[in-house]
Amino acid sequence: MISVKNVRKSFGDVEVLKGIDLEVNQGEVLSVIGASGSGKSTLLYCINGLEPVQQGVIEVDGMSVHDKKTNLNHLRQKIGMVFQQWNAFPHLTTLENVALAPRKVKTLPKAEAEALAESQLKHVGLGDKMHLYPNALSGGQQQRLAIARALAMEPNYMLFDEATSALDPELVGEVLDTMRLLAEEGMTMIVVTHEMGFSRDVSDRVAFFHKGVIEEIGEPEQVFGQPSSEHLQKFLAKVR
Ligand code: ADP
Ligand code: MG
Image 1: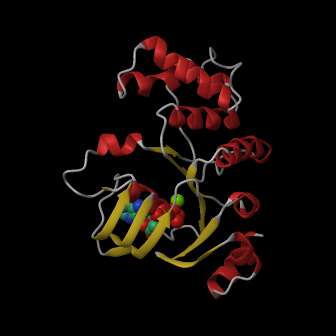
Image 2: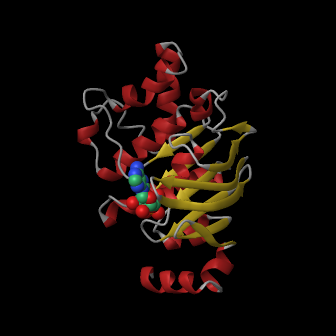
Image 3: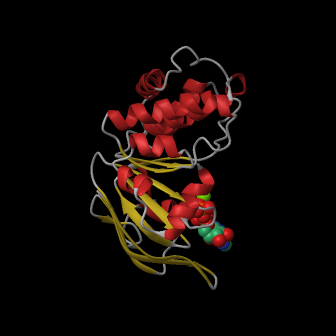
């Protein structure tokens, strides 16, 4: 489980997370929506320890992320992250790209790492692209490669930060389909997204960020169907 308690985070004088409380349970899909600059990415970075916090506690499977004694490498192995864009190593095949972290971080033997990579590439529908180089892939395929790479570390959690925002519209669907598959398989996910249809269909809960606070959180029917916050109503009117 991921637990976020009263987290405050500033960059210099600017407070961008203003007391975030959140729990994401095993098997749950939480989507995070909200305007640009509202703190969505920052929360994800705090959860996997890429950013320090000024106040509050984040726990992942009981490990306190910002405790000095916490082994961040161990923590990050539990958490797969997929960003808007991931630049795969151009001189490695897709198989080698996905096998890299299992080899280097998990120190698996080559054959074992590649078997893991192969199964994850098949999982995301790239089984026939294993021996291609990344520049031979479409943007949608590259994002699925990024997902496979994260999955190859066998994480307990997947965090997506606008994974489809940089894609041409016709390539968005294949990536969302892959994310939907993971959700159906029971992966615990936090998905920052502008894809309201996906959020509505796939999420167990939706959190609306506004200026560093979670202004509304609930089941998709409620958040999209009967938003109580005025800011959320305005946001939805703009993005729909
Ligand atoms: P979102 O993902 O919702 O668009 P972010 O979490 O990226 O929002 O950013 C929240 C706020 O924090 C923004 O005002 C942004 O400019 C600021 N911010 C983000 N990262 C940094 C950083 N590394 N240094 C300074 N300010 C930052
Ligand atoms: Mg962001």
